[in-house]
Image (spheres, one colour):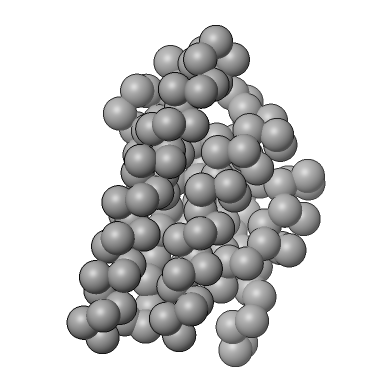
Length: 137
């Protein structure tokens, strides 16, 4: 599925401008994330109707983590717009792998661990591990 909604917007704007806009023009970022989420949801529906799957992948969550963003931004821009996509994949009987680079630590890990993501792998310069939920080992 490519970049998640917030990752797409951050990629287009650049990380620094995204961080500034997250303070100065948050509504614009939400509008852009919402539009991209609709496009990805349409893609998931299109693929599901044609029996493409059941495994999907998405990335880009690493754009909304420290040092430019805190836990509120992570929830507001990642979880908020990723959950409907993940729910659609699950409703179609699929699984989704969410990949993120970086050193995610609490409070991000609990958010990820209790979120509806099927599989979330995190790789960074000093560690690499996977958090699984509802996916056979």
